[in-house]
Every structure is written in structure tokens, then in C-alpha cells.
Length: 355
Image 1: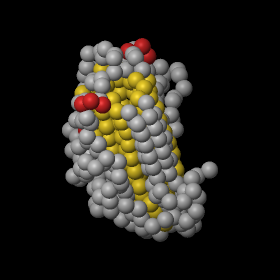
Image 2 (image 1 turned 90 degrees about the vertical axis):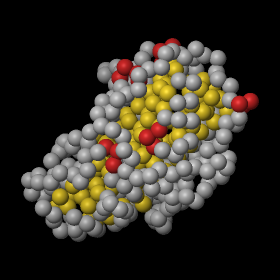
Image 3 (image 1 turned 180 degrees about the vertical axis):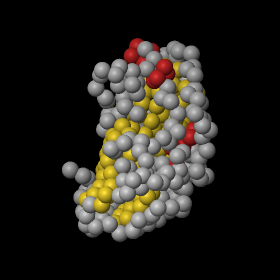
């Protein structure tokens, strides 16, 4: 049963009646279990969901969900719309917020929690003790290095450094990826991080194929390994380009800063997608950083002895990307104008940063 498309004030809906349009987790740009906050002043593309019963999806002031095909939607037990916020379809049991918030499509009462079929988290790999005893890898400013599958401590890629990952399974303690640095997979990889992943401005994460499913990142946020510990949060710095799946089910504050381009899916307990202070800019066209070709003379393998490859996590359903994926060009580090088709999250790069 669909309800009226324009909402004023707070509206409590009838008892649950409709299932969300898709229960495939890869069909979503961002999935949070408890809370997802987006904006202000942003253009968004794709589907967004808060899966838990009593969960809250907050769309801040002047944030606009684009009309993509198939029809995009927001799903959450309660959806809060800020002033001039506008979304397409809504699967929810309550709409609250500003009288100028708008649902342009239809509203469907729904049952929560949602089961989106995400694979089980690979605790054995992400929490392996080798991550706390493995050798750290530090890549100097502007240098390149190639890593083989195995177990490492901290990965620190300083400004403009490039790390190439050979295909296979990896375990790290944590990642610290500085300005303009890149961590690029030469084939399908499964990356397990015990603590957290942080990037600075204009970093790049993804596979040379451009396929988000070739770059699977599982982040334990420490709490998946030691439930009594505090969660360690992951951060995508402003203007970071991330092509892959980034799953951190115990992260209670996964941050995507302004200007981030996400091609794939982020999963966490709570997520903040940060926008700009000021008027919402025109609809942006995302760009994908091209893939530099590694040269044998500049891609030494660090002098560590990796542990045997850890098993690749087996999803509970096959991975099928919803649309063809983009292929980056081979020109080193310019910004091409191609627009990828997988479900991206656009965060407009203009204007000043959020305070």
C-alpha cells in the first residue's frame, strides 16, 4: 500500500505491510544497523537503509536523492527529513522532521529488522593474532611497493605513495592512507583489517579492474575481535575515491567526509555521510582515478614473511554487481570524466567543509 508522496510534519504510518524492493545487500550504497545520517546540502545516488528495528535514517537540510533507474529508495523504521530534503521512495513506519521535507515517490510501511543477506563476517581472518605481531609496511612519499598475500601489521602509505596488492587474501592490523596515496589491487582481493581504515584527502582505494567486487574489505573495528573493547572508527577523508565493498559491522561511527565518491557498498553499525555548509551545488559527475601501471624496478616486495594465505570468506549468496563496472584509464593520476554506473554515493566536492 502506497501513501501520499508529499509529507508535512510528522506522520505515523499504518502497520507494516510491504517488503523493501530488494533484499540484496550489494544493491545498496550504504547500510547501517542503527543510525545513518546524510548531509547537509548533498546530491545522492543509490539506495540507503537502516536495517534495525527502531533504527533512524536522517536526511539533513537540502539533501536530494537523484532519480536513478531503477527507482531508488530510502529504508528505515523512522526517516527524519530536514528542511528542503527530498527523497524518492520510502520504506518506513514513520516520517518525521521539517514540514518542507519531501518524498517525491511513494511511501510503503515495512517490517524491521531487514535481512539483506549480507555474508557472515570472517572473524577468523580479521582477528588473526598475526595482525598484532606482523611486520609493519611503510611506503615513503611518492614511492611504490607491491605486496603479496599474507599477514602484516600497520600499512602506512605516505603522501602520493602507491601500494599494489597481488590477488589473494590479506590480514592487516590497520590502514593509514595519506593524501593522494593509493592502495590498488591487481586482481580480486579479500582484505581483513583488525582495527580500522583511515584515508586522508584524495586517496584512492580499488582494483585495477574497476570492479567493486574485486576489492572486498572486512573491518573488525577491534570490537569484532574483543567484544568488551571500544569500537575503532574508519574514515574516508574528503574527496577519497573508494571502489569496493567495505564491511565493518561493529563500527559505530564510520565517517564519509565531503567529496567522497563511493562505488560499491559500505556497511557499519552507524554511519555519518558529511555534506557542505551552503547551497547544494549542481548534480556532480563522479570521476575515477586512473590506474598507474607498476614497473618491476619500483615495486619491491617488503622484507616480511607472510603467513599462509587465509581462506577467502564465502558469501551466503553469489556476488552479482547490479550494473557493469567502469574501467579506469591507464594515464597516471589525472581525473577522467567518465561516469561509473554501479550504485555510487555522490558527495559534492564544492564549497567549504562541514564544521
